[in-house]
Image (cartoon, rainbow, N blue to C red; front, side, top):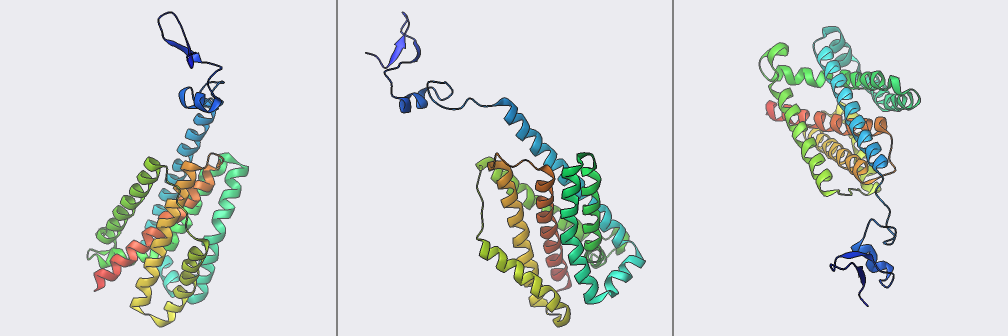
Length: 266
């Protein structure tokens, strides 16, 4: 008896009941006989829409960040406040930068129509936090705040290239990227302790070490978040995905710009 029922021309009509179910799965993966699930076009469309919305929200956050950084780096009063605020202002700024994304996420999930303005504001505040570093980069480029965009634009290009490379690799390979929780906590803890310590020590070596650690954290955030978007079919929060991706872009950009500034000073 043939494993497959055939018509008078010898063409297979389908899996015979004589074929074990495991063998049928390999030959007819999308049939009831094969026991596999028929692909759900609605689920595929939902995930595609979720990805598109996630990267749209990310673009909104990045635009807001660029706007905030431009405004802050060109405002003499704002720069004077930021550069003269000292340690207490830094603590307050870190609190705002860590609390605001949670507020933006709640707004976006509870009122989807307000998602874009919420993420725009979150990005704008992050840009204001970057403004002093951007200001230094502009002036160190040698052409003043109006035209000296060499270091800043280079940091943007390098960040964009790393982002594209990580995104392309994960999407093409459907890679699952995870890092040890203890290692991540150690890196984050080092950054939290070293940043305020360096405000008093003013050590160039410690400063470079902090930048490298923040850059590694940013790259990991991009890779792990992109991996989650690609490989986790249950994930369905574009706002959360965009905020996590933005955190990676933010950390990566500031680390690269700081390293370029340190190299420019040398």
